[in-house]
Image (cartoon, rainbow, N blue to C red; front, side):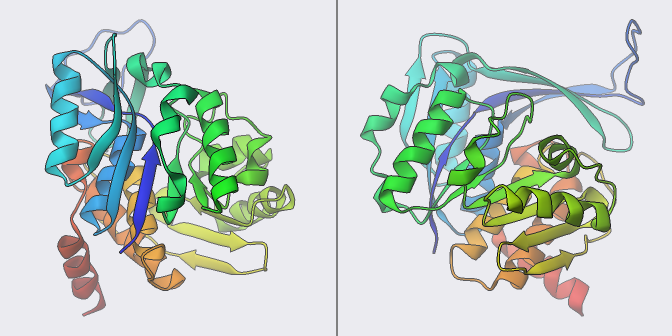
Length: 305
């Protein structure tokens, strides 16, 4: 069983379904609104825990009803919340609009996520963990401090540079595994990414910058794994009826980390993560759509039958 520390964001996702996404200046009718536990950090923690890992969540929550609800949700998923810090402001909020094809647009209001600071890290013993998961929805100074402390403790860091705006390009030298989607890969590498061939070109450029391992997810095309030793693995996606893509990437990352750092072979871990993501896009919401290990295993058994 992998022992995973997630340092990252926790948000309340306010999700409104629409027939089509509005254009600037347009007012449209929504088809319904729901409140879902989210935030990239919490999503990845949830996905890892539901895939059998032992997970500790670290980050900031506000002292409001949303914060209390999110904390309770993490604990119900068996996640250790002792490193979650209460902050005297609002909990992070994501305003999400999802269209009939499952595509979405998102506005983030970070709130307490950006109040989580380097001082809050001093209570954490990094040497306890098999891997640390990071994203880009908290202060960059915190991510830098985590990378320094993890390096000193000899613990690998898996980084998801999302949102890619503001991602510090100097960080890759301390990242063991970079997991990013095609948009983030294009922004980080300067190479257009629309298929596996272009993803491989972008991946080589990122590896040249000193990243030992990377995974580029390509939506319904699948994912590409590359490393500094020359390994290249293309993993196809599983065709499903997409309902909501909100937590697909986070589900992939958490599920992969739980499997890979829990001792599962690389190829099998990639297939497991792809299956978990497929199940996630088949349901609405962020954490509410993330499957448990038994569901993913059953899905894989069914597809291989």
